[in-house]
Image 1 (cartoon, one colour):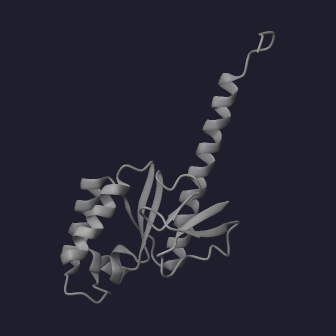
Image 2 (cartoon, helix red, strand yellow):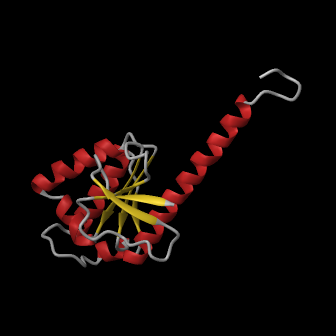
Length: 159
């Protein structure tokens, strides 16, 4: 499977444990997608400190714009390289309190319909990203097969 990684992504997942080829490209939104689906599939990756930072001040406005764009995608998610317990315990550098971080995340999930997936750590976030993309690619492939079958003439019919 080929995975597109945004050229601005600073710490991209290598996907070394997975059958994946990674290509870098500028994308309109998100960090990870599939070739040809960059405007329909988007996975945003966040480290915990980055997430807390994105929820404050001018960063919050920029992050909300990104979530607004993602909200129209077929497959969208924010994968977080931490657990909700890490947030609750304040294991990040920010003046934002854990309750405020969690409340913002829940608000954004409701407002934009973009799930925030707390994956425990970086390896969990990479696993989640790969398999979300793989499942989407498989679904598209199955839909294409069904369409092709539906459009094929029945036995004995003229083409």
